[in-house]
Structures are given as C-alpha cells and as structure tokens.
Image (cartoon, rainbow, N blue to C red; front, side, top):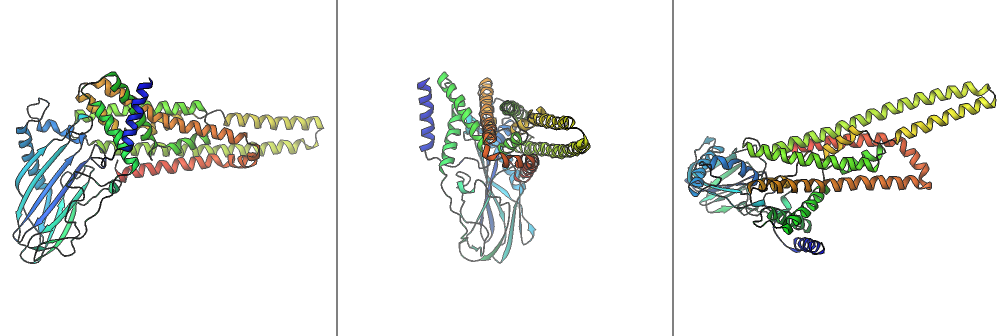
Amino acid sequence: MRRLLAVAAFAVAVFTLSGGSAAAHPLGNFTVNHYNGLTLYPDRIELLTIIDSAEIPTLQERPSVDTDRDGTVSPAEATTGAGTECRRVAEGVQATVNGSGVTWAVSSSDQQYPEGEAKLLTSRLTCRLTTTADLARAATVRVQDTYRPGRVGWFEMTAVGHGVALPQSPLPATSISDHLRTYPNDLLTSPLDIRDTALATQPGGDSASNTDLAASPPGWLDRTLGGMSRTFTDLVGSKDLTPLVGVLAVLLSLILGASHALLPGHGKTVMAAYLAGKRGTKKDALIVGATVTVTHTVGVLVLGLVISLSSAIAGETVLRWLGVVSGLLVAAIGGFLLRGAIRQRSRRSIVEHSDDLVLVGAGSRPPAAHGHGHGHGHGHGHGHGHGHGHGVGRAGLLGMGVAGGLVPSPSALVVLLGAIALGRTWFGVLLVIGYGLGMAATLTAAGLLLVRLRDRLEAAHWLQGHLTRLSTAMPYLTAVLVLTVGMGLAIRATIGGI
C-alpha cells in the first residue's frame, strides 16, 4: 500500500512540475475547430481551411468514412472522405467580391487521424480551395464560414495579400493557434469566434495586418490538472492493464472527480446554503453526495450510449440542455423554499396573534390560570423549534443531488468511450463511478463543513442575539440565493455553451 501511495504521489509531483501546453481542444472533447487562412492575389483568392475535430465528434463521424465497417479508416477511405468533406467545406465557406458570389474549387484535400485522449482518435481535415477574383483594382471581399455552424469550437481567420494591399484589415496575418495545433492558454475561457469578415483591398505590394496576438503560457493549475487528465486517459488506453495501473487509474479518477467539483457551476454554494437554511444534518449532506454520484454515473453511461449509436446528436448540445435543466431544477427548489418561508411566516403570525388573545383573556384570571397560559406558549415554541430542526425534506435533498450530478463530465465521457473502444467497458464504468465518487466527496465535504460550522456558531453564547435575528431572515436569504443561482446557471448554459 505504501508503494502504491508513493507511486501516486510521484505521479502528481510529475504533473505539477511538468510544463506541457494548453489543452488540445479549448472547449473540451466535443469541439469542432475551424481555421480559414485567406491569401489574396490580383487575379485570385486562395483559402486554406483546416477543421480540427476532437475525440467525440470524430468517433461519431468515423462510420461514414469507414465504408467497409472494419473498425479502422484505411488510407484510401481517408482520401475519399477528405475529398467529399472538402467539397462540403467549399459550399459552406461563402465568399463575395464586390457583392458577387464566387465558387470555390478544391485544389487538394487531406485527412489525418492523430491519436487523442484515452486512445481515441481526433481528425484533422485540410482543404486548399481557390477561386478567380479581380483584385487588380479596389474591391471589397467578404467571407463567411457557415460550415457546420452548430458545433462548439474555435473559429479563426487570417489574411495576407501578395500584390494586394489590405489597409485596416480586421484579421491578423498569422495564426495565433499555429493552424489549430496549440491554443493559447489566455484565450481558452473566451475562444476566438471569427466566422465573418469584410476586407477592403487595393492594388499594391505585399501586405499583412498588424493585429497579431501573443499567447501566454499556461499557468501552474492548468499544467497540473492538464497533466493529471492526460495521464489518466493514457492509463485507460494502456496496453498492459496491470493491477498497479488499474488502481492508479481509479485513484486518479477520484482526484479528478473531486477537482472537477471544485470548479464553478456545481452548486456547492447553493447546496451549503440550502443545508444551512433548512437546518440540514450530516445525514442530509451524505444523501446529497450519494445522489450526485448515482446521477452523474448514470448520465455519463446514458450519454455515452447515445453518442455511440448516433452521429446526428451533438454531444455539446445535450450537455447544454442538461445544464439548463439543472439550473431550472435548482431555481424551482429555490421557488419552493421561498413559498415555504412565506407560508411559515404567515402561520407564525397567526399563532402569535392567537397567543396574544389568550394572554389578554387570561389577564383577569387567577395566577394559576395565568401560569397555565404561560406553559401553553412555551410548549408551542418548543414544538415549532423541533419542527424547524427536524431535517431537510427528502425531495429537496434529492433535487439538489440530481442538479449537482445531472451534467456529465466530458472527461469522464471520453474515458468511458475510450474503454469501450478498447473492449474494456467494465473498466470504463468503474472509472466513471470513481469520478462520480470524487465529485460527491467534494460536495459532501462542503455540506458537512457547513453543518459543523453552523453547530459551532450556535454553541457560541456571545453570538446568540445575532443568530436569533439572523434565523428569522435565513429562510428568505436561502430561498433567494438558491433561486438566483439556479436562474444564473440556466442562463449561462443557454448562452455560454458547455
């Protein structure tokens, strides 16, 4: 056991100290990334288009290229597929010169399948297109990329002129991503999205724009998590699946799952506020964690099956809608909490008003009767407090757990698909379960720490007065926070992709 822990510690140390580059695909393993490089001459326009598809879209599209259905793409099949796809690119990249449309001709086409994560293949399509154009005089060239517009990815354009001047060009002359080979780390959170451009041209010498961008190296955290993720997927695709490799892969799945849950958007704050506002117990936090594990594991398995069976389903679209559903579920729980808080306050006002009437009526009674009225008020207060601290409703707990695990992790999905491709489905399922357990551990720990902190604060006598006032407003604060964050998650999933 000590040897195993030493190996794991050594692996983490290597990940931390290693350099490495940014992730191969800026928005994850679902992306389809575009590069369009324009070269303008007095008599023609040449276009270099590169389509870099990540593991999951490549896996979905491979059956259409693997025409003999033997499970591999032969060089002949790759050549035929490249020609077919480049003709589609020529139709999808629309261009006009002074408002008149032009027709692209395919000069050459090539399709490569580099190995990606978990031994899954990626694809790199290269198309060289050309069209005649009269740029010997001033003109306006417009180019719009409409090829596969529904996929998430990086969209980049460049432009240079040879014998054509490009004054005030909005495009850089060189590719910031090295033709979709290395994506700059500082733009991963806001990837390029240039799909439409208009260039004013004039006859003249060679020209290039001065809008080139500089890329910054990845940070320490990106190198660490990126190194762990790459090693994890490499372990899944290892030819020799020894017990040591298997155990190390499971350990890394737990660590990566826990790290994934630390990222924004997994409802830790909402869950903590919910448990605090509804006086949740340690058992309630464990229930939420278990629900997250089950939901996430089932979600990955189902989505993996769907993607494997159909190339028409865009995985990132499914994730986006699951994100919307998750946010709306959290918002619905917040709405129910707000309604419950309002109803509870209304009932409390009615009871307090009734108690006041009883006490007023008892004012002329003997002292014994008055004592009985006091006992009644005390008993009622005790019963109310007991009901409030009884624990969180199971429906709300399950809803929080489902919302936390509803959106499957793309990394876990890639691991599952890679294991299936290698005939190790059982191993992929085991690692997906480990990933979900890691997520659940983080979320459960957040809930347990919150419950412990709340109990400590309640035991502090000097805070009793403040806590009494806060307890009155806490149900409302909790409800508003849960409702607001839920709507924010839904909106972000709607407009921000995955």
